[in-house]
Amino acid sequence: MALIVHKYGGTSMGSTERIANVAKRVAKWARAGHQMVVVPSAMSGETNRLLGLAKELAPARQDASYLRELDMLASTGEQVSVGLLAIALQAEGVPAVSYAGWQVPIKTSNAYTKARIDSIDDRKVRADLAAGKVVIITGFQGVDAGGNVTTLGRGGSDTSAVAVAAALKADECLIYTDVDGVYTTDPRVVPEARRLQTVSFEEMLEMASLGSKVLQIRSVEFAGKYKVPMRVLSSFTPWDIDINEEAKSGTLITFEEDEQMEQAVVSGIAFNRDEAKISVLGVPDTPGIAFQILGAVADANIEVDVIIQNLSKDGKTDFSFTVHRNDYARAMDLLKEKVLPALGAAEVVGDTRICKVSIVGIGMRSHVGVASKMFRVLAEEGINIQMISTSEIKTSVVIDEKYMELAVRALHRAFGLDQASA
Ligand code: ADP
Ligand code: ASP
Ligand code: MG
Image (cartoon, rainbow, N blue to C red; front, side, top):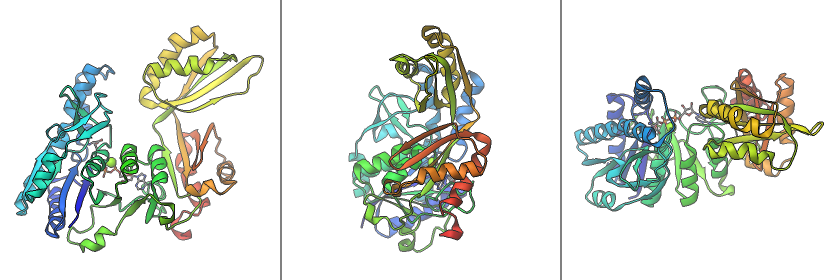
């Protein structure tokens, strides 16, 4: 008997019929003798619908009093899911009980809309499991020290599930979703993408942070920190498939490099359309300019990603960086109103039609020429590179958004990731 956490995403919970299927699958695992904790997301489209309602009433703001209410609102989607799933399990004849985050409680910081989990009290859950119940806990939400409901950021149910698994020292955390594992790139963009049997924790961390939305990055961080065995698999297989076969399906996230079965130099390609580029032109090239520009941006709580500073000419330089598109307007206003006059820079220009494409692989540590091959492939496609950023196991480029799919496909092929070349 093992203690297993299942997470079901929005599509998997998308209708009462699908919820009934989830219940049948969970019941199968419970009947096989496992202690089961289930963390579902809101039904597909529900979080967007709820946030849309807020927009109908008032334009979005950044202050805590507004963000608090957004969390109060958005967290209800998951509450519907846990109640329905508990009802469906009981209808299967399986004792089940559901909890909202605050009831467990899952304690978080008070950073509304992007709270971090601080601690999870496992006592209630353990008592229910000992009493033979399936425990169903809302994904995505928690409670801060002041008793306010918080949410963990979009896609946050993955993180809830892994954090619950870590707190309970679960034997495995199974992330059920609408694809049957982690692919070499998003299979919806590149049909030739291949499912990986295993992916190293470090690669998964890079892929998640570079835009592969299959797992929220914080869930991968949690899995790494607490060594939670974690697998991504499909919720669309028939619920009654053999449990041992199911337990081995999908993609396993591994922590040891030698567990890695596939030794490709590049394991995956990630892309991200959520960023915008800002350039401050004609900046005096003196010590402290990066701090003056980026310090002001950081003080406004805006995260910066890729940064480049050009060679100076006649004592002036250009300074470019990317921010999340949601922060773009705010960053531009701030720079125009405050930073530009103080710096004596000539101009600030922005571009929202960019995307970031990245190649990821632990094999890049031991192979040279991988980045230059990436640049060659893009050049052959006539794609201009606007910015470059590298780390030990990834190379990212910022390019015009309209070439995104072309770039991803060309790189996927060139690095031998297509089905045919596998
Ligand atoms: P859920 O609602 O189950 O959390 P998500 O939509 O958050 O599902 O994540 C699954 C989606 O992630 C897939 O439908 C797929 O389009 C996308 N995705 C992006 N990159 C990858 C990748 N490398 N491998 C698999 N899926 C990916
Ligand atoms: N329902 C939340 C969202 O749509 C959390 C999740 O699905 O993981 O972002
Ligand atoms: Mg998700």
